[in-house]
Image 1: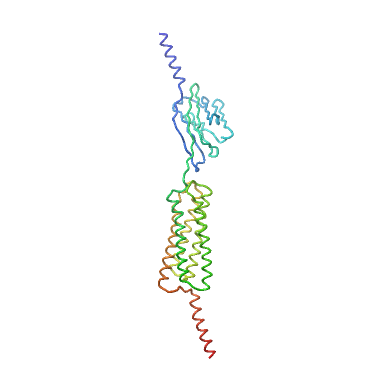
Image 2: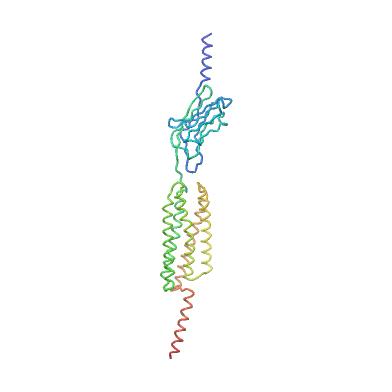
Amino acid sequence: MWPLVAALLLGSACCGSAQLIFNKTKSVEFTFCNETVVIPCFVKNVEAVGTMEMYVKWRFKGKYIFIYDGGQNKSTAENDFSSAKIAVSELLKGDASLKMDKRDAVLGNYTCEVTELSREGETTVELKYRVVSWFSPNENILIVIFPILAILLFWGQFGILTLKYKSNRTNKKIILLLIAGLLLTVIVIVGAILFVPGEYSIKNASGLGFIVISTGILISLQYNVFMTAFGMTSFTVAILITQVLGYVLAVVGLCLCIMACVPVHGPLLISGLGIIALAELLGLVYMKFVASNQKTIQPPRKAVEEPLNAFKESKGMMNDE
C-alpha cells in the first residue's frame, strides 16, 4: 500500500515539474521592407494564472539580451538590443515572442527561455535576412527597355531630319538637337546602370529617377523635330499630347513607387514609359510618311524666303537693264 501511494505522489510531482513544450520554428526571415523584426517563441502548455508566475529570458550568442521578471513585472533589455520587448499581455497565452526594431536585429541564433513556476524549457530560432527585389524581373526589364527604345526612335527621327534638311539655318537646330539627344542618352544609360536589379536602395531610386525624369526631354526634342521639319499639324499635336500624358503617368508612378518599399504602382510607371515610346514610334512613322511624299522638307520661313529672293533678284536684273 505505501509503495503505491509513494509512486502516485512521485508521479504527480513529476507531472508538476514537466518541461514546457514549444512550437518549434527553425528560422525566421526579414527583409529591407520590415520595420520590426519578430522572433517567435510559443509555449503550448502554459498553466500559469498570472504573469507573476512567468519568467522569460532571451539570449544571443550566449549573452542575455532581454529578461522579463514576472515577479517584479520588470523588463530589461541589453544596450545593443534596446528596442527588444515582449507582449506581456500575451504571456499567459504562451506567446513570448521577441520584437525589436530592424536596426537592432543581428543575424544569428536566438534562444528563448521560459520558466513557469517549477517548469521551464527553451527553444532556438535562427534569424535570417532575405533580399527581395524592388521590382519583379519583368518590370525591371520594361523600365529600362521602354526609355531606351524611345531614344532609339528619336534618333530615327533625327536621321530622317538630317537627310532631308539642308540649310544653314536648320543646321544650327540640328546641332542643338544632336547635343540634347546625346545628353539624354547619357543620362538614361547612367540611370540604367544605377537601377540594377535588387532590393530598394537610394542607388536604385536615383537610377529610376534619372530614367523617368529625363524622358521629359523627349517631349521637347520631338516638338523641335516637328517644327524644324514641317511645323505643327493636328496629328503631330495629338502625338505630343499623348507623349505628355505618358510622361505625367510615369512621373506619378515614380513618386508612388519611391514612397513605397513594395512598388505596387509599378504598372502605372511602366504604362507611362510605354506610352512615351509609342508616341516616339508614331512620330517616326509620321515623319517617314511625310518625307517619302516630298523631296525635301521645307520649313515655313524658307518656303516664303526663296520666292521672295527670286523676286528681288529678278527686279534687280530689270533695274540693271
